[in-house]
Figure: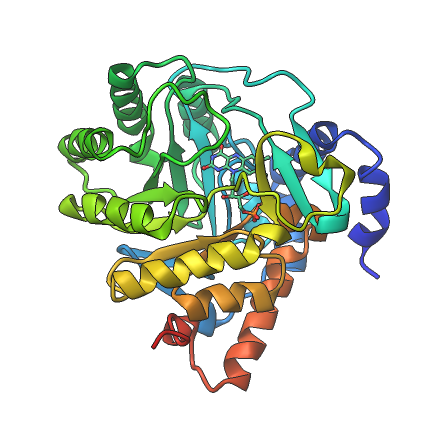
Length: 356
Ligand SMILES: Cc1cc2nc3c(=O)[nH]c(=O)nc-3n(C[C@H](O)[C@H](O)[C@H](O)COP(=O)(O)O)c2cc1C
């Protein structure tokens, strides 16, 4: 029995946002001194050469990253590195601070091992995050920056939002993600319409003198044809990868009392759909565009499924909430065992193993 499995029932008596805030406070304490960071790294990091991945010109020590939304404001990137994650994606970052939607806006679905959130891009805004990154430095593992727009922005303003956040924060990033798939922002226009996408990517490409890798994050709810059309569009530009997927508005097969809450569903109920989309994308792009698989990863088996379906890297958020601080270590250790069992010498060798 892990310590977290004893602490979790207590944490789960708190409202989820309160528990998240307390968890973040603990992580801030971890990263505040060198000895605590070193002690946590010693306890939780798991290194193995088979876990190293090269993707879009960046070297990842292991393929298990923290998904966007967990550390929206870049407050605990160093602690997450100490917990053994191979990369951390901050954001979604918007140009100015936003409070997001009214509370409650985050719900646990314990029976389903899921969560529903309708936070609505709450965050400190790009200037505060830039100052924090300058002050605290970036972690040693790759840092992704997920960029978004203000909830109130018009179609034209949205382009400028993406451009400004990119301009401010891409110098700190190993890769940038354009998030056009959040189910919780007001739908005043369709961000993933072909014209809007083209304008976003044209603008960022013009801004991208340092040639930072740019990825696009897609949702799981559109028909496959629409997602593939989106891929065609981003490939007209120099897009370096795809993050699949964001949360879902589907509610099939859920048991928890909170299942009717409005918002994006994450965790176990999303796992198969997101893996299916990873596979569709990997087949469609012939493995030429690195894919970051995200949705319901909470174990080595779940991570491995996504790798075999074509993901070069995986990320998680909800699995971390349910499994606690040793999540990355357990997944990485388990991945090495699964690779050995199946005769692969590295994660990279197993990417897309299940494809025809
Ligand atoms: C509370 C919460 C907040 C999130 N915020 C963001 C966000 O700001 N930007 C984003 O691109 N994805 C966000 N996500 C989606 C996650 O990055 C991820 O795509 C999704 O949760 C599926 O992964 P999981 O099943 O491991 O949680 C959020 C997810 C949760 C649960």
